[in-house]
Image 1 (cartoon, rainbow, N blue to C red):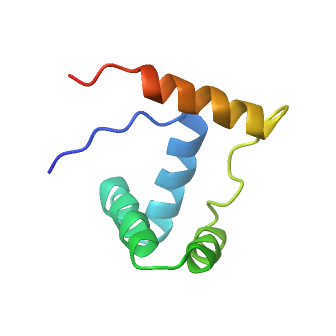
Image 2: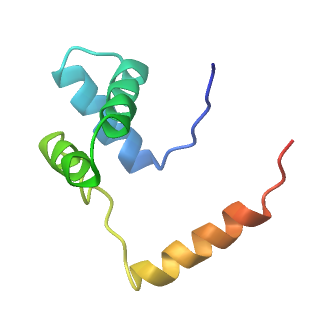
Length: 81
């Protein structure tokens, strides 16, 4: 399966740097992160993200709950072609 992600530039740079440190390509590193999250409890996933330097990697300005609601509404309204 092919999955195309549009990442914020800062996140892409951070993930690329972490992948390079671990000797992985960016797609392989992202797959590792996704697989680790799938096999873990929520607490273990948070620990993994912290260990990998991904937790709170993008600064959110303002009300994060409000931003989450906005993003959820955008996702609900997108077309599914």
